[in-house]
Length: 211
Image 1 (tube, rainbow, N blue to C red):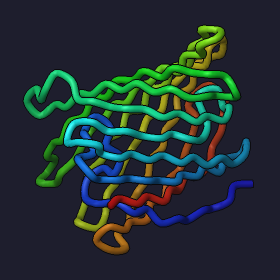
Image 2: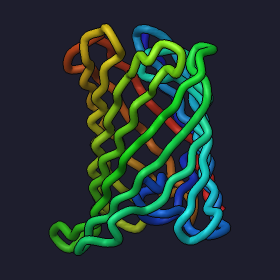
Image 3: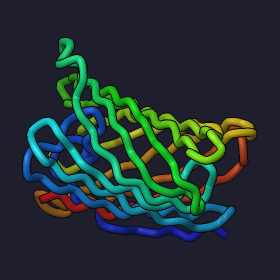
C-alpha cells in the first residue's frame, strides 16, 4: 500500500541542486530525500560544499543504481567555460557500494531558459559507478526540466534512466511541484513511476537546506 509522505524542502530560487552549476565559495547545501513505493522505502542524503567559486565537494549516501547501499564523496569542476547559456561540469567520486570500492566519474550539463515570461532550467546529470575489484559498471542519467510558476511555486519533471551491469535498463518519470513556505523553504510533493524495467510506483519527498 502506498503511503503519502510530506516533508519540507528548503531551497533558494532556481534548482537547489547545483548540477553543472558551481555551488559557489562558502555555500553549503544538504538534502534528505525519501521514496516510498510498492517495493519498499529508501532514503538518501546528499550534500555539497563550495570550496571556491569553481570547486565543489560533495557527499552522496543512499541507494546506488544496483539498489544497494552507497556512500560516495566527490569533487566537481566546470569545464569548457560557458558556451552561450550552456554550462558543463565534470566530477569524480570515490566510495563504496554494497561494501565494494567504487570509482564514480560523471558529466553534467545545464541551461537556463525563459518560457512565456517565466524562468526555467534544464539539467542532465550522468554518472558511472565502476566497481574497482570486478570492473562491473552501472550507469545512470537524470534529465530534469523545471519552471518557476511564481516566486513561491515551481514545477519539475525528472526522467531517470539507468542500467545495472548484467540487468535490463530502467526508465522512470518523477514529476513534482513545490509550494513556498518562506524565502528559503519550499514543500515538494512528487510521484515516481517506472515506464519499463522493474515496474514500480510511489511517492517522493525531500528535505533540503542551503546556507
